[in-house]
Length: 292
Image 1 (cartoon, one colour):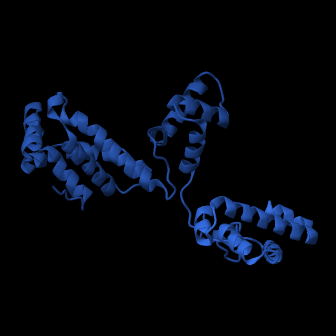
Image 2: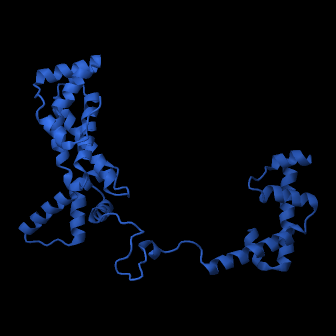
Image 3: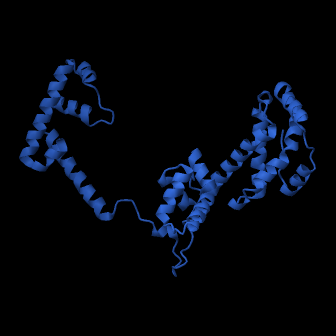
């Protein structure tokens, strides 16, 4: 069943004119939908409680979301409630639907509050919607006792009151304290019209680091070629296949190809490394760190 959310005003007007269901009628409609999938019963049930959904949606307007979107999310929550409602539990549908409507609206508000994910756990959601209220209450209580709370103490008391880690309070204060800004926006204090993105630190390697890295790689390449030149063809093959491939080969696969045992290949590999080390020690002591 689809609901028309094109106009929150007209929807609100229709919702206010909808019938009020008594407990017996509500129960009968719930059974008809659950047991017989009667869409007419579902429509009556949803329409009757759409005023409840709209009323709850209006309480979240202070978060800056369009009222029409809030009503839409409230309506989706109402339909989820109708889908999952079990009339055998002896609970009024309106009581059950409140939780689903509220959860749907809260999820929407948190998803659209910022491009940065605001929070996903139940404790973070509770903090998002209650931080300001809890802070105001703690300030009133402190003022009544003649106490002035500093910022850190206030955060600690909020964390204790809501039951969340202190770091969550600090994070949420930052998220609620300001809105998102485009990195391509012009800095208001800059006369040359530079954008904020120009002020970000460049994480890429600097010119001197690039030159030094290239120099070190060239030296390592020369040392490797020098070390390999001290080996015979079989030893060079084993070293290349075991250490210089992206997907190194096993001792067993090399043994099968060379008609040698796995242990013999290991011995040849160890002997080759010993030769390379000896060759390089005579040339430059610094290479020892490279060969380990």
